Image (cartoon, rainbow, N blue to C red; front, side, top):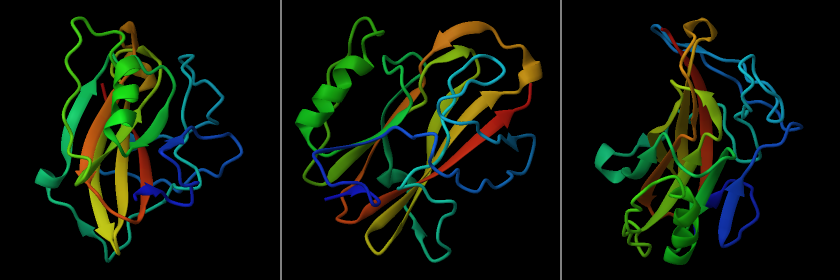
Length: 200
């Protein structure tokens, strides 16, 4: 059964990071983007937004050098939206259709009409959902960038993209989310979190 690394085994594994947890090491990305140093999960940035830190008992600061990247066809985006119904940042492993149905309902509370529950073969796959939480300006997004595997464990790179402070983005309430299905494993899922500041 896949689980978040070092988290209690349960039907639903959920990560809401706590301020006391140690922030993982951040790597500077090349190009026009820069890495943000994240404040505590309970603090707010200069735009008044609740910020999430990429830390926790199942966070990793890097992908192992001998891990193998999953092919793009193995990582299927089930759902992605800027206007979900999930107001709190979090990461969820959904291992059964029942858990998926329970998660899907609040995810769509801001969507009319509501699409049907996407079908996932839980005998062969599981779902990883990454919610960015409530944001007060345009320009925020979240993505599951790459997935790597070693010894039946996964390292999942989650990227949160935010506008630079001087960009003065439009004031709008967004709730970014991405949901992917992954081939089922018996090991652990490690999260490698990055926050990227996008140039204007």
